[in-house]
Length: 120
Image (cartoon, rainbow, N blue to C red; front, top):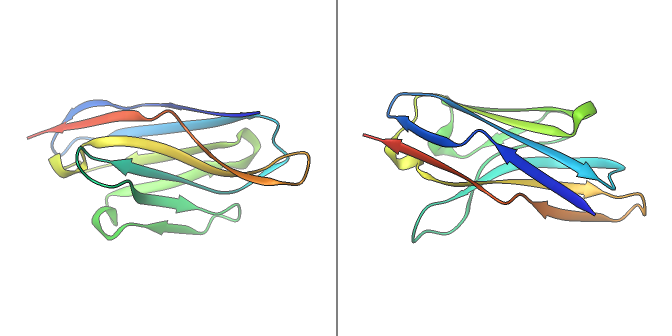
């Protein structure tokens, strides 16, 4: 089994910063892409940012220049540094990982979600 545990959400004023962390544990041989998605009330879940094992990153247009994704492969951990937060960033943020288990089979895993609320 694989678990993704997120931390770092909370309430912040517009213009502020938050840093999300997500640590993967369990039956892990390696992890391909890791990323962060978010879902606001009444909206579909959307990709915020992703990062490959080699460090290639991809961002939603709405967060480019404000958010930075990074990972520490040795710790199976991914981070999301969020700066210049806007009320529109308010959502539940979910960690995602494409995990290669010891059976050499890859499965997608999701964290439980962490609430980010940005007040105006």
